[in-house]
Amino acid sequence: MAKLRILLADDHETVREGLKAILNAQADMEVIAEAADGSAAVAEARKLRPDVVVMDVSMPHVNGLEATEAMKASCPEVRVLTLTRHADDGYLQQLLVAGASGYVLKQSRAAEILHAIRAVAAGGTYIDPTIADRLVANLGGRAQRSAAGTGKTGLTAREEEVLRLVAWGYSNKEIALRLDLSVKTIESHKANGTQKLGLHNRIDIVRFALLHGWLRDV
Image (tube, rainbow, N blue to C red):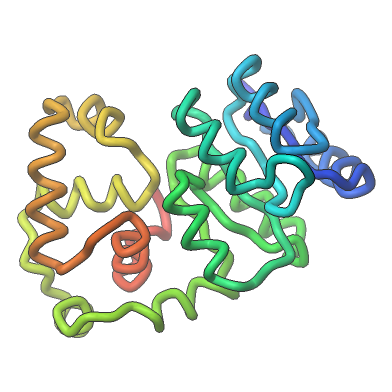
């Protein structure tokens, strides 16, 4: 079985060493590199193309948000799981818009962090349960609330499929390849679906997906 290739990015050496020991003890994981700041993390990601980057948000020089944006621009296939002490969903929204696939708190149990890594590596979106409930609670719009309450979204099967994949973190190109459709067709389904639901961006789609339980498994 091929192991998940993981890059650790955190400016605290003690944190990196602890995480490295936990991850390397897993039969399906291997830490292939470490970085102490966002700039080094981006350089290592471009060079090694890891499966998952476990990245601290607060780092010197280039922070986790800026590093995520740079990584997703140059190597979009790399999945980014942000690891932070901040339970503020404001950080989460910025990171999801930047392209992060997950957000887990440092104070979470090791088992939770391992689950989050496996989830984003499989193409999923993982949001720490501590934050997920608050994110759902902040979901606005009568249409979304009504649809959630009735279980009816008004979406076609294909529109729902596309929006699920967007919520899971796939790009339009990746969705097109997965569904054997053109990118233009994917963009059309995405636009139609978001218009029906009154959603405007990826964070809205993720909120809606959380509300409907779309993010439990890929």
